[in-house]
Image (cartoon, one colour):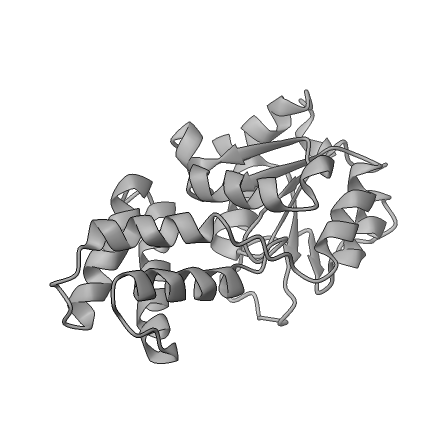
Length: 234
């Protein structure tokens, strides 16, 4: 095998985060007496995405983020009468129950794990990430998890990937591969950690950030050839 460990993102790489977020948002709204609509979800998602980008830059902590996104959301829809902390808790609790895999992800992780260890490296809330993985059929095939909230660092900080390598005793950076869908988070973390990057890009988005990518794929099945050293650099 070309690599000794596969460091793998969770959201929108293995798990369908958009669907999970939609389900959790609906549940949280209902608990708070707010009628969930596609328009409200769009407002929340834009606020949430902006705050996660701020987290990647070290401009906010996760504990603050999990409540502030609802403070800003409720202010945006003029519902400051609703308790943001309670809505945040309702959302987090529901999100942890949403274990919706990307099509083919469970089968892919099973195949990969039979060749090399697969370690999840995710920017996420520990309760949510553990909850989803505990409910997932892919859990038996995962060698470990590195969660940003638990180590106090978030991708693109290289410490996330370095911890993932440490879990399975891999010290040679050239023998580690990072798989993820985010250029600014996953792929930049790989660059910072000096490990190869595989960009999962199912929508064929153009890499306008100029971030170096060793491999680019549109289907998870393409990872098998990369792990075996059969895929040339793109």
